[in-house]
Amino acid sequence: MRVPRRMHGVHLLTLDLATALLIAVVYVGFTRMPHDGAQPTYSGPAWAGVLVAAAVGLPVAVRRLWPVPAAATALAGASAAILLDITREPWTAAGLTLYMVALTVPPQRSVPVLAVSLVLAATAVLTGEAAVTPAETWSGAVGVVAMVWLVLGGGWAAGFAVRARRAREADRAAHRAERALVEERLRIARELHDIVSHSLSLIVVKAGVAGHVAQHRPEEAEDALRVIEQTGRAAMTEMRRTLGALRTDPESIPLGPVPGLDALGGLADQARRAGVDVDLDVRVPDGGLPAGMALAIHRIVQESLTNAVKHAAPARCRVTVEADLHEVRIDVTDDGIRGADRERAGGHGLIGMRERALTHGGTFSAGPRHEGGFAVSVRLPQDGTRTTM
Image (cartoon, rainbow, N blue to C red; front, side, top):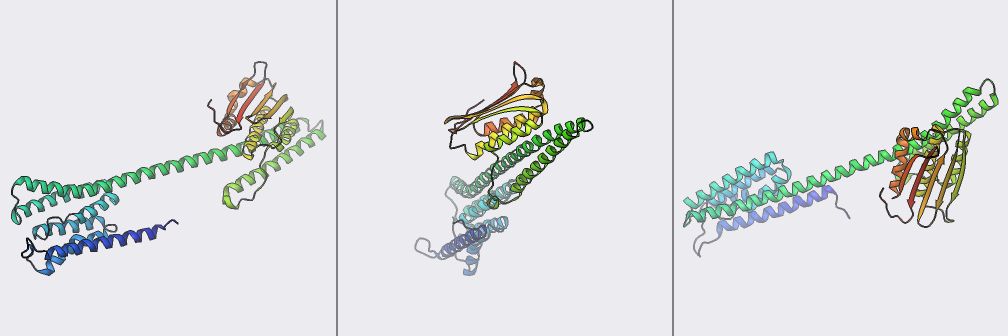
């Protein structure tokens, strides 16, 4: 079970408090620890020793809330412990607070905090070595300073490394979210384009027919207007269904039929009413095809017929959909006279068909035929293997 963020923060604060109390108790013990079996090295007032020990350890308890003040207090307490000869190793708590400074404070602020901490720590160590517990040589004092810097700098470096790793993870997450948004927009654009483009193309053609024959053949004009009404209603219904699915929680979307192979006949009928003589040939296994692939086939055929209506009508168009155990083959050809112009004017329709083919690991090609007209050819593998173009 995932721990809520607030509870996780409480656990970390509790851990910091326990660590702070442990460090403070240890350093209180240092104030009473005998040296070489004699009196304790610290001979000052007991209350002062306890105060210094608290200043050394307790800042760890609040390092997540106030990292810079906690680091300053821990550093001051450690310096006092050195100068009062309570202990020569009081820097662990300061290193823990500097870890949190590097983790939570921007580098332009945390780097100066580290630099000041290193200078003050070195000053305290050298002063303590010279005045309180003189070292045998200066090299010994320098060695102590190096160890102190290792503790403080190591804590800061660890925090900075974690901060950098989290920043990289946040950047990757933002990039993934941006890509998902772009892909979702493309998916929506493809669906709306397929719905609107096909229906509007048929409506425009029929409106032109109605306007042309309205005076001389009113019955044909009435038929054209009836087709316009039916096509518009169907497009509005499908668009409402698509937009409703996009606005609704995916888990609450009612299950409904997805346009597939059964609807190809309706697409052919619509194209015929727009003046394209469609010859439809669909041969698939008895078990049918997956819903996602059937939808892709439907959209590819729909866009191909839309292009034929827009650019080739009146013309003859042949649509062939064949499937076996290995692949699905979609071929749409027409004998329109503007095949070359259509390739340049294909726009988002050809792009959408290519994207659908690539989504299923297939190949796509489209262009004018040598004998005239236009051809669209798509191959979709059934075994899930992806091919490159």
